[in-house]
Length: 284
Image (cartoon, rainbow, N blue to C red):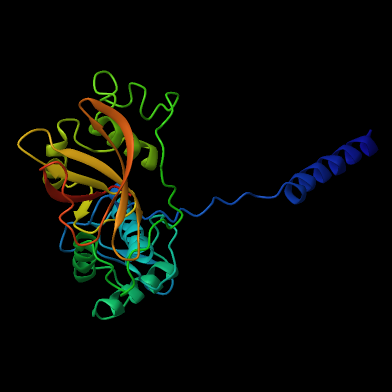
């Protein structure tokens, strides 16, 4: 009997070891998102986070979402503004990598490179995100960066456009707002925080609510906005060329409810049917 118990114990131990050594642990993939609008922007003058060599130190006012904003904002500056630094895993943990990339940012904008993402760094970062320019390089914004352009009309099986998740789908299929909202949903993968009214109100709606950054420089995935005495117009930037010209996908509505892919020249007023160009909403 004792021999059987001993054998059973040995077999159980072997089973445990087999699970440990034969079943590899799966690490979570790093989230290097640059979509800082998903997180809470630091607003308190005492917000900060830094790595002291052994652990993260942060203000009691600074929460995890705000630290993720810092990390995603760094990634945005790297991907879209030419900052030469390593992409960060947006995990809300301000470690050695976050310190290193923060120092690169601080050096690039003329701040003391101490690696502490504090009030001065936060202010500088917000300025960079808002100005719509490639701050850290003279190279123009050359389209695409793994961005998948839409050059043809969406199929009727595409739920981002032809289902109730698109608030314009019940009455306004073929209108510019219906298409731009669906395209934004398609790009983000989540419900966009865009105006659900007239196209002419989209830019001011976003600006007053602070949902997304905005500016005058075309970027892939941005919503181009026009305003007129009537409804205005919106379109989606699909490609940006080295000379600053860009292409958009759009629907015109009214009697022409069909897909159009158009190009606008650099430095022009981006005129559309007598409407005034307002700017771009940077949703991605």
